[in-house]
Amino acid sequence: MAGASLWMLLDDIASILDDVSVMTKTAASKTAGVLGDDLALNAQQVSGVVAKRELPVVWGVAKGSMVNKLILVPAALALDHFIPGAIQPLLMLGGTYLCFEGVEKVLDWIQHRKRKSPEAAERKLAEAQGGANGGLDEKAKIKGAIRTDFVLSAEIIVITLGVVTQNPETSFATKAMVLAAIGVIMTIGVYGLVSCIVKLDDFGLFLSQKSGMLRKIGQAILRAAPYLMKTLSVVGTAAMFLVGGGILVHNVGPLHHGIERALDGTPGVIHGLAANGFNALCGMAAGALVLAVVHPLTKRFGKGH
Image 1 (tube, one colour):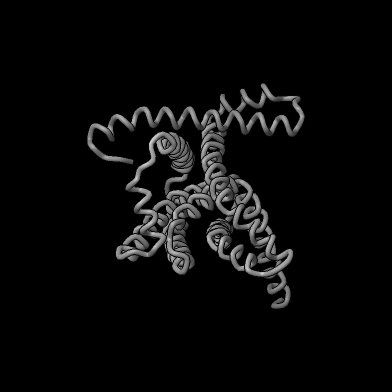
Image 2 (spheres, rainbow, N blue to C red):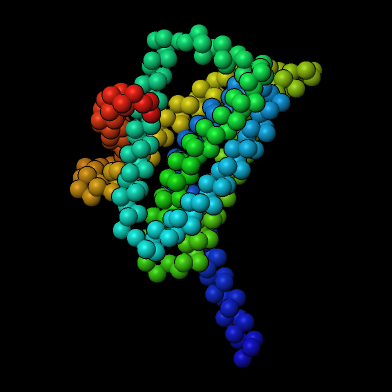
């Protein structure tokens, strides 16, 4: 009898772990766009830090990110238990916020292209040289990056919660383990890659001091590093519209079904590209609409976003 009970217990544990594995994989694929945005934004946040302080800054932000997850995961589970009907509205609110942030980034980029600030350039140079205010600037960067991470982490957790609540029979333990797994995987993945990105130029410099093929590789890395950061910025902004617009479209039934009917019968690749393109357009429209409402208010009360 004891042996049979132990076998049943092990079978139950294996079943739960299998469910956790499947749901974690599904959630990871659905949050990949936010992960790309998180990666691009955090890589930008730590840029301009003096070289020897880059990894400590990344570590500081990573610790703050884990604290964010420790707050968000229990909050998400409590929300699912007590107010499950609030998940979809919050998910749409988060998607709308991402679209709004995306539009703001595009406008900031356009304004920056038209008018570059000498004061900003001087401040960036002072940060790179580790001036007298370097410590304060570093703390400000960490706090700003942690605030950004909180918003994107909340989006990741809510999307994951949407995945695990699709099956009403999913146990509380399974939900908790999936949310915790996603939190840990995303944090390690994002800040591990950010660490590699911010030290890429140092690695290229190291190789460029060698001889032969290694020297050429190092020089190529040094030339490519600035373009990589610019590419990440573009990808991050695009991810905001794709993820945010996708959330809005999929949660508005008539719109989602209308798109599916319009694309019915199209080849897989074309179907995917067209659907993502429409999601991005909806995201841009939603972000522009929110900005049109928010911008006059913030301007009137004298507060920036």
